[in-house]
Length: 285
Image 1 (cartoon, rainbow, N blue to C red):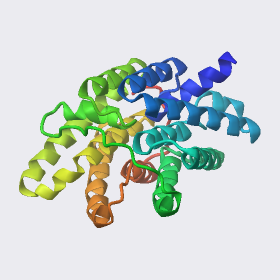
Image 2: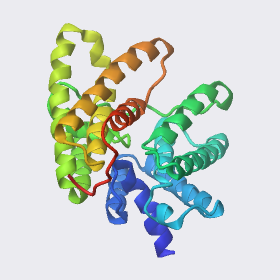
Image 3: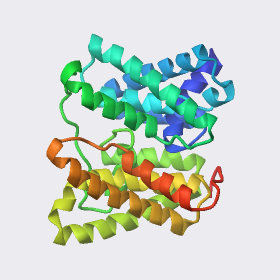
């Protein structure tokens, strides 16, 4: 039982590329402070993901490290943040979590970095089927204020839909406990991108609507490339590429009112890993 609880906690830490059940438990506690319903659905999704991995007889080492369930846990957090729970909500969430586990396992089999691709696919599928699913939206949560440098800390929390600045700062600190150098470099890259983005937004005001997406995706791209052992300059390039993709996708999808979630982060990191040297997983860099 203890081993299974640790595996479920690791699902939360792996959202930030951290293979630690202790860090996962701390992140879950921060999430519960910010949004208890989202934390509950995140835990439920994490349990479903672990159960799916066991039923499908997927590698125990991957499951216990959280590498098979973190997309499912993130999907549960997103569901709890965006929609009110009901029977349809619960059934569709279970299906989506199962699909993320299958997709993550398939990518792992071919040694491809899943990142949050399965989560994005599940959310896009849900958005497409929303007219038939008829999920009830929850009241909106506060967004990050992009007018100050503190925005970069808020963006760290927004990865798991945590909006308050103080809890975003606490989230960054918890992640930094395990990977201090990679997390610090990711923050530096995110701050540099925020400064450039803010300067451009003064002459191109429409960019301001993409601030939230840029913050989340740029930070994740810089952090992910750091965990894969890339040079700080490459991390900055990856974060900037994610920001550009946010602006392009945001402008394209704005008329349809479709979110892109962490798709820019995935596209940027996959592109950088694809054109650079063979990925090297590192605990910290």
